[in-house]
Image (cartoon, rainbow, N blue to C red; front, side):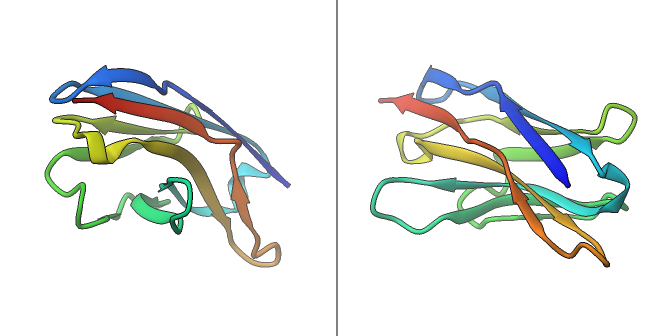
Length: 118
């Protein structure tokens, strides 16, 4: 089992920055990917950024060049630095972890609201 707790959401003006943090606990040695997804009401959850245990990253097209994902293995934490925020970045942001075998499950945090005002 893996538990994920997000923090760092809030309200910011367009052009501003926020940093989200996700702390993992439990069977953390089994985690092979961690990342962030976001969702607005009535829309599908979409990829924001993911990072592998080896440090490889992948970003959603809408955030490339503005957001940076990083991983602090010593603290079992994943960070999402969000710069040049736009109103369309407004969403609930969810931390995500994929456990390797034999677990193989996907875990989600409770979500944190990010609101960008114009």
